[in-house]
Image (cartoon, rainbow, N blue to C red):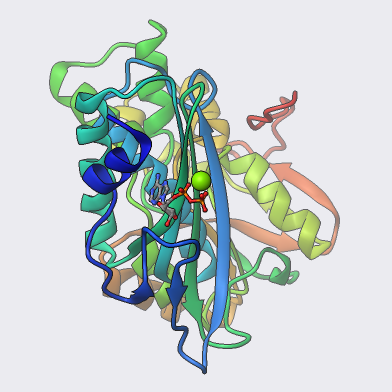
Amino acid sequence: MGEFDLIARYFQRPARRASLGIGDDCAIMRVPSDMELAISTDLLVEGRHFLNTVNPEHLGHKSLAVNLSDLAACGAMPWGFTLSLALPRVDERWLEGFSQGLFALADEHQIELVGGDTTQGPLTIGITIWGLVPPGQALVRHGAQPGDDIYVSGTLGDARLALEVFRGHASLDAEDWAAMRLRMDKPTPRIALGLALRGVASAAIDLSDGLVGDLGHVLKRSHVGATLNTDWIDTAQGLSAPVAALPWSQRLEWVLSGGDDYELLFTAHADHRAEVQEAAMSVGVPVTHIGRIERELGLRVMDRNGEPLSRRFQSFDHFA
Ligand code: ADP
Ligand code: MG
């Protein structure tokens, strides 16, 4: 199968929102005149971001999910995306599964694939995505203010637990393993929550590298510091049952620096506590209050008794 047959077979679908989609030199897409575009891109490389054993359908889902998660962090409504693929060979079983996983999530968010590029090479997946946001209303990393509350959505540490089971460092019964594995392979981008937090959150980021590291980006961009509590990890608020059952030190580390959570971390003025809970309720995603933004720079992680934790938590840095 040639390159063009492959594109036509697995990736070309009738254009809906685009006035010109796959098959031309450019895609053409109308943008509502009263909106700004939020644009993001992510590159996934085999061996670095996923293993060659991963189910192709899950990989199709995850490739788009990590990009949607960036739009969620900006409070943007998904609109369109492109797909750049390097494939070592034409593997129809793989392409079938990958495109199914990709389009199932695309349809869930009514987002359209309008173009891309395909070439032979080591398995690499690049997606560029864009969404719409009313002018000036995008959620940003640099908006956190001293006194703001810090929150996270959903449950943290699940994907890390699944990874550690893979590595043989933890074990789970079949049911928990299936649930944690889905959290790793098929993360749920928090699009609806991001939209609901426009005008409520002062800053936001999606958690891809780990809570401590990603919070660090918000602090740096906002020129503020923070105190992070861990009593919520102790009481298992905002944790799945399998993570809550882990010994304290593992739980602490995998929740604070696990990575691959694809939840939202955001800050909000203390006056907005009711609005935050309302936003969370309206989209059915729980949020947990985990700390406070402060003027003093740096991050202070407190143990369950409110004493500073001496150990440093490191997030995943691709060049470390
Ligand atoms: P060009 O010569 O301009 O690079 P190509 O011949 O590579 O264009 O691609 C032909 C058409 O197929 C273009 O419209 C391009 O956007 C689209 N396309 C190529 N690869 C993909 C892909 N993986 N997913 C979606 N569209 C693709
Ligand atoms: Mg090309």
